[in-house]
Length: 118
Image (cartoon, rainbow, N blue to C red):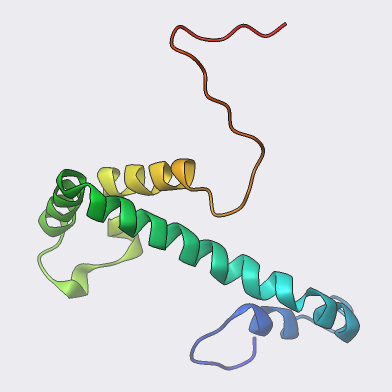
């Protein structure tokens, strides 16, 4: 891999052997996809996730309590320990359900009692 303090998608692509590397013209034609798919979707999810938490202080307080009770210092924050936080995981899952960062199909509202399809 190319030596870089902050590796990114380009490091991964350029570090491949010549036989596996994307041709330069394909890199140019896919640059928008590479840049947007990796950043815009994450930014969209996190901004909507933050908005929802700020609009629901009870949920925000519960999440803050879980995080603060799971760590005694900032140095303890590690992905392995974050994975153990059930409410945090549930919040992200709900955020993805409510605000999918990538369009995926059509939504429908089902009336109370269910729906029958012919």
